[in-house]
Structures are given as structure tokens and as C-alpha cells.
Amino acid sequence: MDINQIMAKVTDAIEKTYFPHLVNSYANWTSPAGSATDSVKEQMIQAFKDGLSYTVGRNYIKIISSRNGGNCTVHSFIVIKPTKGFEIGDILKAASWNAPATNFKRGNVFELWSLPAVTWTGC
Image 1 (cartoon, rainbow, N blue to C red):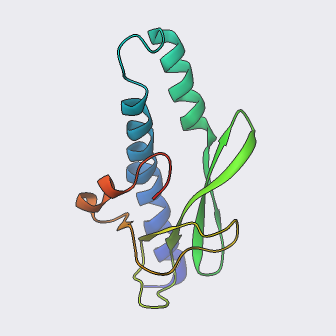
Image 2 (cartoon, rainbow, N blue to C red):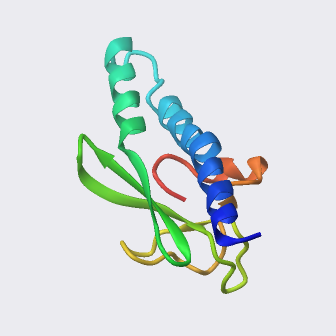
């Protein structure tokens, strides 16, 4: 598989599986009874969803979360080039803005059973 096919497969998994999982995690967190009206919850969930984005690097895709266009944080990194014992699609915790923690993977975007280990706050 060439790099373009890998990128298409990984970005598809991010957009169709990983981002919806993070939004669902956020929605479940905002669910406690009496915490806010339904319209406020829906606005918060939509703002979280709209703030998810990614940038592609050489070895990783950086998952970024922002609120209302500001306060950007790195949520996680997704491996796109097998390196340091990791496979394509592995989810890594962010160690800094530019680098993942490479001690162990937190999940894989292609393995749905592994996603509950990752929440909207990070991995």
C-alpha cells in the first residue's frame, strides 16, 4: 500500500470512527441530569464537534481540539508510518504539542474495541 492509500484509510477512520467516538464521549460527560438545558448541551456538543481537527505530519497525524476557534490543545497522535514498534492507526497520548508519548499505544482507530480507553479529554 502506498502512502496515499494509507493516508486515505487512516483519515477515513478518523473522520468516521474516531471523531464520532470522541463526540459521543463528550456528550455522555455532559449528560448529568440538571446540569444544563438541552439546547445548551446541544450547543456545547456541537462546539466540541466543530473544534476537532487534524494536521498531517511525517510520521503521525496530530488530533487537535479547540473551543470556539481558540485554546487549541493536542488531543492525541495517530501513527501513519510504522515506527518504534507501533502500527498504522495506533493512538498515542500527546507528550507535547509536537510529539507523542511513545511508551505504549492507547488504542487503534481500526480496532473499535480499543476506543473506550480514549475519552474526549485525551488518552
